[in-house]
Length: 116
Image (cartoon, rainbow, N blue to C red; front, side, top):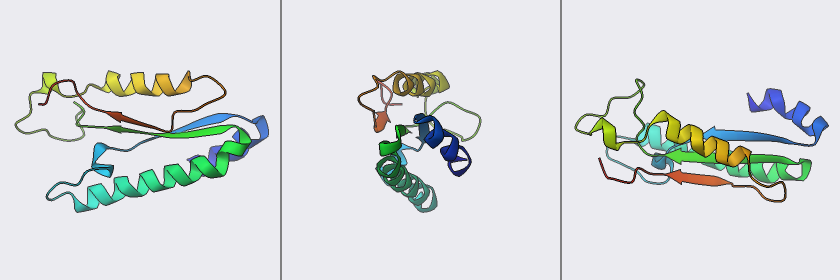
């Protein structure tokens, strides 16, 4: 997707790319080798893209949430009311998109206030 939209962003001299990674890109866990490796890779891609594109006015960031209450992944043993909600991730996206023009947030680590 980024490859498709970057030329238009370059021609406009601005844009945002926000990759949704995971805290698993920062912290490993048993049985999570493939998932963790993919999230570590996404973070590496994000950081390189940020350096490659910042001179064109394009900001590239990553959001790394902990467990989020979605239908995409089960959360056995976790209290759903204590884990992150999709709206929490959306709020982080909005925060990045409204950053002042002279700076950019490159990474957000998003955790619940209470451990599930």
